[in-house]
Image (cartoon, rainbow, N blue to C red; front, side, top):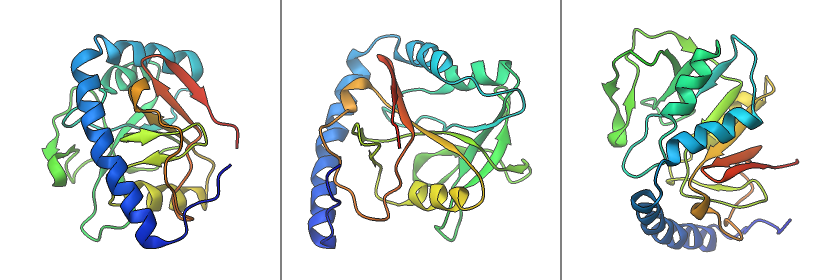
Length: 199
């Protein structure tokens, strides 16, 4: 495994450049990849089989993110509890609130949609994580807010979790620039298949 970039300015520049490139890449992939959401769900169900009652967090897709909703519907039908992230006011770790496929959402920050404040707070053990880029070392490039890094670190302090990045296959890169506080994922699921990361 390549050592993380330690110089903060160099790391910030490298991430910003990759974000710009991969945002354009993902936009093109979203336009050209037919039936990606259903193929994504098929590959996830073949690789991950959580038991009934498992709390699974997903996300509501925005812009040109690959759509995880068929995955969430299949997991809910299999007896899992589904949660969606809520961005807290203090910009610390995400909060997860229970959600079912027929329930309405409210607008959240950054163009997100999230369950309302009346929804129960839950703690997922399987997380489906959005991203801009990923590599085979388990590294993920997000949007720069650090929410998932803080969230995964907090959850891993007190329970075993599985964090799976969700992306188009074309979002894979040779190496994601990463620092010491960037959380590693356990695998990635794309419309082309499941990539298991052995830690």
